[in-house]
Image 1 (cartoon, one colour):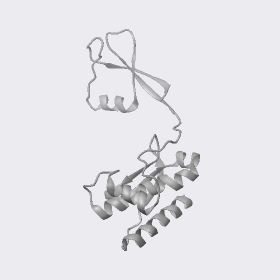
Image 2: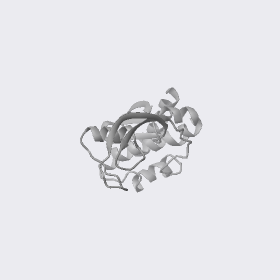
Image 3: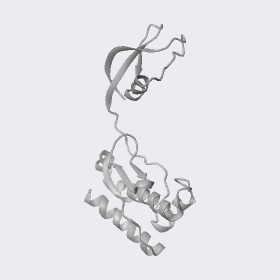
Amino acid sequence: MDRILARLEGCYQLAEQHFNRHFPRPDIELDLRGQRAGVAYLNQNLLRFNGQMYRDNTDDFLLQTVPHEAAHLIAHQLFGPRIRPHGPQWQAIMTELFRLPANRCHNYAVSKRSGTRYLYRCACPDHMPFTPQRHAWVRKGRQYQCRRCGDLLHFTGRQQAATA
């Protein structure tokens, strides 16, 4: 985390010199999971980073991902909430200020993780596995219909371990 904070501080000092103004430092969390390397929460001045991707790709993560997310916060503070996330203002901060390519996405390997699948049934002979998110939506009242037979899908009460 110290290296992320140091890299972030360098980005902010560069922005402050260039724009001749102070930028409040964001809160940092290293708890992001899934496919995203980082996320900027503009209104909370918060950056969340994927700890596993940081550990697996430390050098590139510090070089590209940390400035990428910092540029989102800096662009928001300079130009307001109506700009596009990867629009010309953000791109200019990346290319002209940070001297980095304005890449929208990372190319880090994303490890697959195992998870639970909830088994649903209709009139068809096969079970339909639901993700935990979809199962939660059903518990809140959402209904799903089988695309083959047209019946409503109902939870069987059974789960299985699966790879995502």
